[in-house]
Image 1 (cartoon, rainbow, N blue to C red):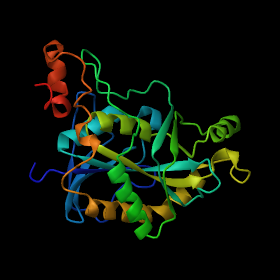
Image 2 (cartoon, rainbow, N blue to C red):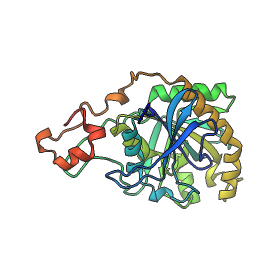
Image 3 (cartoon, one colour):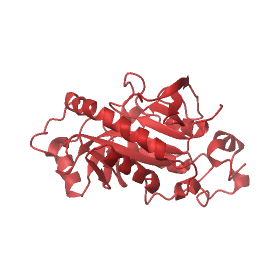
Image 4 (cartoon, rainbow, N blue to C red):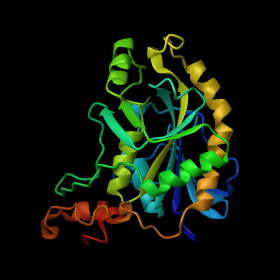
Length: 288
């Protein structure tokens, strides 16, 4: 591909495309882990080549528990992506994070149930560091552009990733608040883990749609409530992403770019040839 994209955009609920994207072309990929959610839309945004993926597929057909996270991230890596800006709808677990606000979280807490979240296994063992799951440089750029866009935006906080597809019970929502969690969603944790293994910088632009069910005014969260808030925030989210794309550096100096350097434990000569072939875009510079 001429001028491959180095920036990936994953659009979640309410963000199914980027209006500013020009020179569009669709590219379908098949990966060793199956098919991604849909075609990648390759184009130009603010002078840079990007690849956009609708997380839940065209028409929002794939539920959070059914998402093929490995295929989605592998496909972006195979295209040449080095940065991922992810947009996601979330519920708020804090009074100060109001519906319509935006959060750039810096931590995760996992409440999912056995979702595949690693490229490794089947003869290759790798353990990447994940103490700081979001790229600090990319997160800073997203936050700064949110401020410039005039959004009510918050830096930091813990994203609790639940399984779904049902929303929380009242008991769960109250428990998560007592734990000090800040926002709750269903999708971003696996993306972040796989992006780290693929040495891709990753951040989340979390769009607060509701107060989850702990709040007396939001004790019955509905899809209609979420979509109404997302529609209001969609233009702001696109503006933040476009501004971040414009500001991204051409060279990376963060630790994300070398996350696998000391993570692969299996002796190279013991790694099955098929695994070397399947994971070539990810491990090729360390194990050939």
